[in-house]
Image (cartoon, rainbow, N blue to C red; front, top):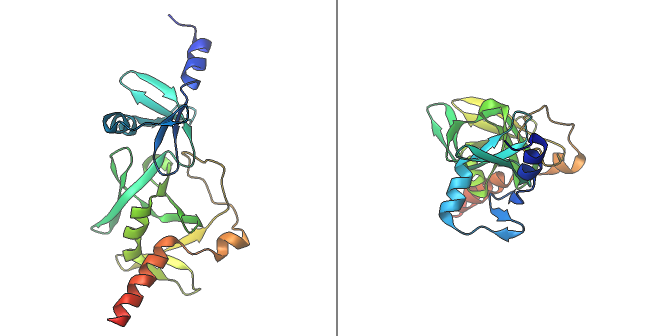
Amino acid sequence: MIDPALLDILRRSSKLRLDREGRWTHDGEAIGNAKIVALFNRGLDVSERGEPILRVGSQWCYLEVEDTLYIVKDLRLRGEALIGHLNDTRDVELDVDSFRYRDPQSVYCSIAGGHRARLSRRALADLAAFLDRDADGGFCLRIGGRRHAISPEEDRSADTTASSAPAAPSSKAAASVPAAASVKETASEREDTT
């Protein structure tokens, strides 16, 4: 049996990295094999201590994550539930009351297990169909006749999994507009000109 301390060192030296767009690298080199990428995406998990890990069969290792472990690839409405398709291939209900944005391309929400997920560009475009303005001029989601605020948040340093209470917004974040709003406003302008 291998020494637990040595096993931990080996697991931490995988040199596997998941970037903010969901691209995999090993020791700085892109992993281009689609079957390996799919295997790795299905193996995303969180250790007992809350650290991001990759499971393949009964083996696992730690990995470096640039932003969040989970990425919402696209989303759709099912009844009154907003469903996100994740990079790990699961379809999960998104907590519509948890949406936060850091900047125009960084919109986050909570998923099952209290984990945090970042919306991909495609998911941001999908989100545009549900965006509305609230009474204060901010953005909200309109789903099933109810409004759910999308709040600004401070920058977090590689918060890979946990969904905790957001920090107080900075003036820069408060002035930001989610990218999805730009998509919706552009679509509205096109409709007005036709």
